[in-house]
Length: 254
Image (cartoon, rainbow, N blue to C red):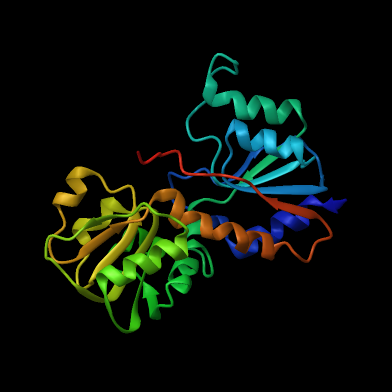
């Protein structure tokens, strides 16, 4: 058994809560007063299936990226399916902690991990989105790459076959790359001076706003799940068993 506060302190030192956006709800989602953790399950989203995986693996702590609670809860009821993970966690004495936008933006967090996997050089904050600049990174390849070849490389890196491309300027070669893991489509009108943006959740009207660079929509899930192995390694110093949840994107491509 381990002192829970030391585990949480380690996470919050890596991803300081003060880095979280004002609208975010990072931190404890379900806290039952337990001060120890024997087994930990890492997940992007704490769904009912994830809680059941925690039960199966005898985990009493779930650390998720996406917060379990965002909106005000007026009544706890099984009639509300969105509350079932909370109810199930409480029934099984499982606590849930989330590190969201602070984990996106921290040094070595999701944005940096994605840039690292792409082997980008000269990585800096994406300063063109000043209110949320920590959420994105911009860097460049050592050499110019063929866009179509890079897309195939990216599929292998993110372990996905499903990538959407927006390319109104018909770019064939790319070098300067912006990455905004998760959903970064709202920042598209502010970006310039890049060859390609890699993000997720690009909607129809977002795509129409694109002019001078290409956009690769690699998926919200796919661009963020890269952080789970980082979290597992982060807590490797503790004598506690850790598991990475089995998750998949909710989308099916038919």
